[in-house]
Length: 74
Image 1 (cartoon, rainbow, N blue to C red):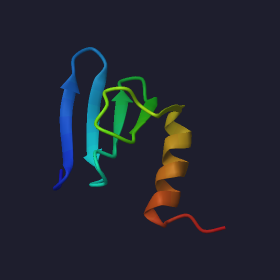
Image 2: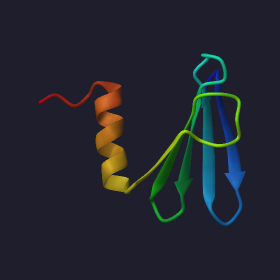
Image 3: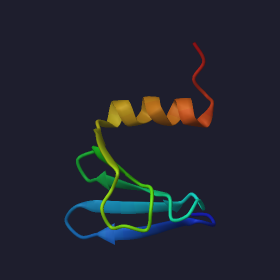
Image 4: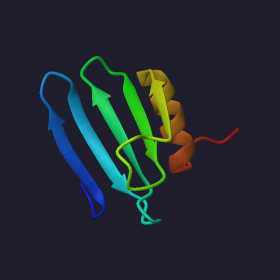
């Protein structure tokens, strides 16, 4: 998908996308489930325990993605 993005198939669940943010182990993982929901995990260190977890519906994921991509303007 691109440098710094790792994709892993999660059998029976969907796919996980890991993005290394390059700040002392800071990374985000996004699990895209087969039912359309997404789980966003934020890791602020090399720990296996996330600092934050957010579950997003498909609609909310699209809104957040549009803001992050700079395609949503109010």
